[in-house]
Length: 430
Image (tube, rainbow, N blue to C red; front, side, top):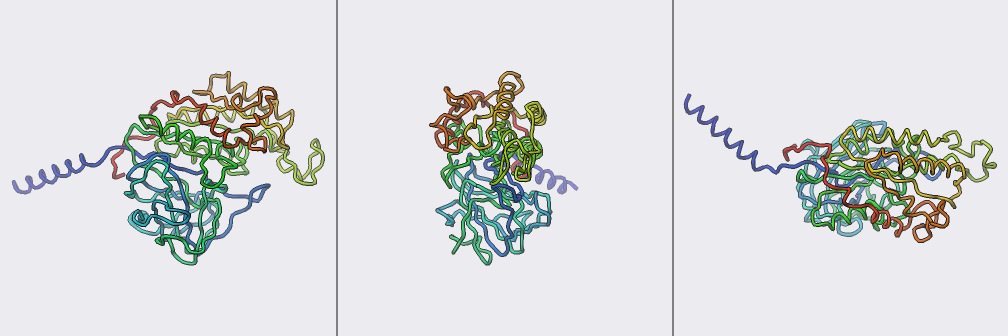
């Protein structure tokens, strides 16, 4: 009996020592993209079917680490999605990976996973040293037909698609086709010390970085992340949850901001801050006219969003809902004013009046924790309904590289002081 008691005590003591040696910290979003189901609508094509193909996608975490996990998604799928194999490695060039860093991704210890329709899935944690802003390649093999209904078009990097067969372990994908899209891949989380948290940039194409060339990383969230990384104490990751064409109150280019908030912000680990820059598409889409459309004051089938007009009051209520739901998770909310767009063919005096009303509320209501006045920053002082020429990409609504840099540089880093995240410190085994 005494030997048994001694054995138990020694075993428990050994377990306690082992537990103490495990690093303490939590998961933090290091890279994300906002997925959606593409629909046939102006400027957006429907999803395609992928079968017996290997897809290699490049991502760029804004913080580094030695342990990570990958989030895949079938959240917009209508049937189960089977990922037959998946791997991760540091990127060399194009579809080529650094083979010494190649790691198999598993799911509950298995190399294969079937994700139910409507669900996400995390990989098991994997040990790999990743420096901040290092490009990482995630490769998946889809054996059976899979409709690409959970994806992000207009990605900031080229993805490579090759096949037939499972080529995930290859150093380079032979004869690969490339396009700018991420498929079934929604995030990379890094295991970090408890003091590191994340900021989510939540918005539309201006947040996404519309107009950026593949691999140029000129979007304002990336440039903000680079400013933060240059600070002596590095405590904040920045992730980009922008969708081109996204709106606060209506679906279309992805689910509305109100509909996707839980998935794209509140469910992410380690989030302590959010910047919301939305509303310009709610204002301008009702004035979209397809080729051959009638006059602007006539309703026709060639004006696909005419019935989705929104008032300033409705947009303000939508923003209030975003603030309330986000704060309920302990996240600080930064409100960005809506930027000018005169010169784009959907501009109208009616829409401009709505924009001015919403911006006045953002500036004066004291509802947001911090106001980021991007409107004042980029508008032409002589024609405030227009963007300054040096910041305009040329389409009069999206900034160019200088405009995105000015947005990132205008954010005072002092307001992004350490703030408790919406996750708890965990044991690294979780």
